Length: 411
Ligand code: HGY
Ligand code: MN
Ligand code: MN
Image 1 (cartoon, rainbow, N blue to C red):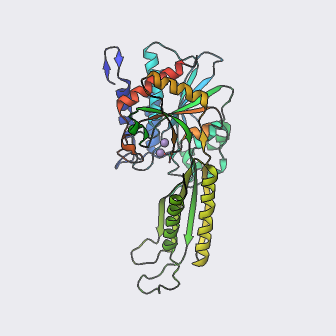
Image 2 (cartoon, rainbow, N blue to C red; image 1 turned 30 degrees about the vertical axis):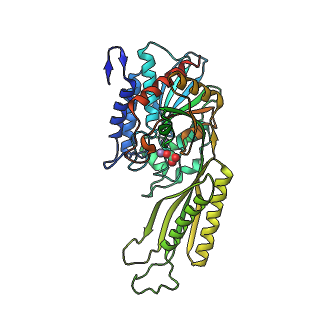
Image 3 (tube, rainbow, N blue to C red; image 1 turned 90 degrees about the horizontal axis):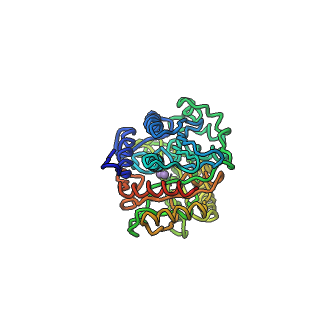
């Protein structure tokens, strides 16, 4: 904690906490903290202690969401804040977790100034937003919104462990995730603070921005089965090479996205078998992801890809399984809450820039429960999902001040 007289450098305080949290990771480059793992447990323990020290009541709900609650005046409702604790593999130290730390530090700031929010406040740390370990995502936020599909509990990670088993092993009762819906009558809204993960604020010379809308996303799991054989003796004619088909699908995802306005398409994960240098690949498993601010554009791309894969595997006499495993519609942010954020950003010296989000967030799921707004923090070089991801302490300090003023504006 950096303290100079009565004035605390809240940005430096946040940076110190994020430094500590970044070490709660699988060893290796960047941060790797997947849901329902020892690293997740270490982050929950670290944040719980800090929340208790800030005077919050703390618990872990049965979806694995860490909740820190500051009770406010009766009948004044609750403002929910927070983001996700999980990271991608070899990711950055800010994506998600910064959105748990900054509202917590904002509450510490108000407490240090002897100011009490005019409503109850909860700081939430969702377990799994990235969907890296299991082929689903937003389980925690969807549980609070009452939209979670219990079927996701049977989804498996790469080791064959189901989400249900992983959650039970984390000390949770996963069968209760359908009971966690919050009362919309009590929830004022959800405000998520997040690193921008793009270059817009840096190019505009702005520390903070307010999100207009969050893009939609869908993910497809694709499995291809052919025949293996000796790389030197199996004739080229008529080979049933699963990787040749997978490569054509990767190229098609890229072509669709390049040729369609406002569409992003990515194959980020693939495995092949038997994966040996001198045998023809028999199986290939890959995930194809499409994103767009326009849901019809995104869905059309998903359908086009399915048709392409079916025709290709028919031609090559290969087995194909292709299923949509995750989707989240595009989501505009709420005008009222966003306007309050813009006002607070301007009061902190910013322009109050408003920009769309190409990344997806828990706020999309929370919008089924309550009004949502997002505060973006400048991201150095627009780099994210990489160890070099970085937000400056002074920008985080401004965000803390904005969140504190937003809370006090709810009077
Ligand atoms: O992939 C995303 O947009 C987010 O970081 N989960
Ligand atoms: Mn991310
Ligand atoms: Mn994120």
